[in-house]
Image (cartoon, rainbow, N blue to C red):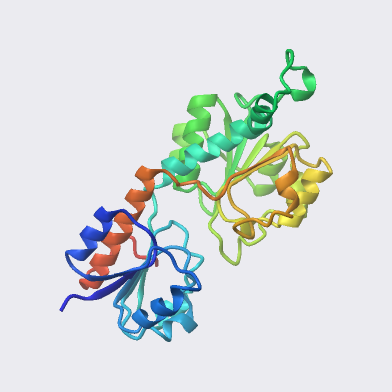
Length: 319
């Protein structure tokens, strides 16, 4: 009898075919109030689960006595309670690296669209306001030859540094738990304290995972340290930022603008002040959302899943 796995996210048929060679699949395209009871019922006999966003904690695991592996289709894994998984001997995996370039492209897009006010100007044209040559109030700011500060110089941070330095001649500052010698050599990135980075950067890009130590890493003091002309970019997790402090900084002119792909609550509430700010570009958490990258992520997660089910150590086992 094949081991039983639950796929709880819509994935490409090729991913399902790959898993099905080894496992029996119970497939839910999404989990909601209608499908969750059936998911819990199937979980009682499941050997593995694969998807993203599901909170996997001790309470859920009480319903999964046969579980061997949880495979996240995501580089982040703040939805997983690792202590609860470890206590039960259940493996957990994620999908790093394969999404680096796509997320870096999104970050550069946010930098450009915020600095050059592209969403505003798009609406300016489409609503028929373009009657003559644009005057100074509609001007943006340059990106090239500016200072980019990256907080979190991992794989995605390095991909952003590459694009910024080689493509836009930007000076790269970074702060990380450890030195990234490769980025220093290839992109002339300079390691510095977080305080120095915030004070000197024209663009501050936050790319840290969400952990207890990084929750609200950017708060009132951090925004006060930034230049009034600086732009804040966040493609990490919404909770790495004190959102009220960010809103205050934008409303009072402490910083020039923000480009955001993530928020404390997702989907974002329509009464959130960030929605109505012209100096804020908002995206619906789509950093890795291309057909090619999402397929690669799902296939990598499937490979991790099958390896774990077969008693092997998955390539992307979370330590």
